[in-house]
Length: 356
Image (cartoon, rainbow, N blue to C red; front, side, top):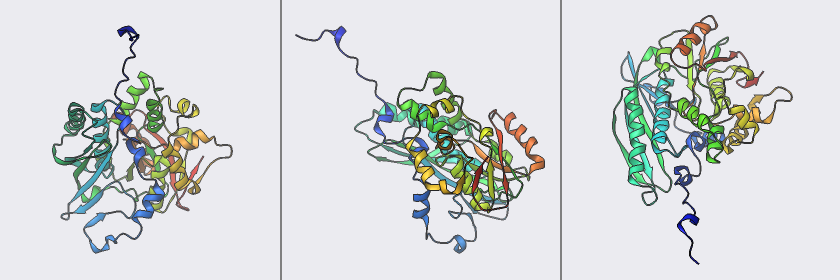
């Protein structure tokens, strides 16, 4: 007997994320693996105009072109973190441009980086990814001036971004000073939201919140760099706030104290983390740097892993002189980052992190 039309099962909708083994900044190599791979790279001393290279794990490279100006260059790309192709393009582009803002720079143009399984994905979906990225670049006031594409087994999209910066405003992750107050500009939990989304357990409000935070440009970084009281900036992405905080601690040769209760969270992050929506990247991150983090007695595992949660297009971690911290925080919030919060301090001591 044939199956009637009413009895036929509806085909499952195509999911862009089904083509990727990971998504967003959770695809990044673990901090320990990356450090091992970069060990023994040529020293930057041979290039005196290279102001920032790989030595402190900073967000982008910076090269001095004259006494007043330096060029900032970065590239960032990853596999889909969401199924909507336009949203994927917007998130990836926002994340890539962030590296320039985190250095205090102003982006001037981008090049697209595209890898697509051409036999598995419709051309209109690829066009939507590119359009999403281009729309964010337009918001940032820059063109997508070209790029490169390949046939790849998994969908990959991102940007190479070029920016400029007055040399005296360049901000590194290694410039924090003893006594500096630490400010985080966005809530964390994107990795957890992504895990819940892939399992179909992120509601519409949660999805909207995830898209809103991951497509919010970190353009405030350019303005922050104009303030001499702002000593260091880095963006919090795939290594989580602990991993990128440790890069700041190591580069600045300082000890960071983070107040766990002060770290801003996406509204459902705590509940989802306690419900088991933890990414594999959180575990990899913790395995890479957990011995450099001191936790309070009885600190729950879900909170520990939330602090290691990989952020896709996360916020900026800013080190600012203590007497200017409240004013800088107010300026950040006024610039459309309502979740921005003071989350800790930098102190003299071993370059590690203590959670209090």
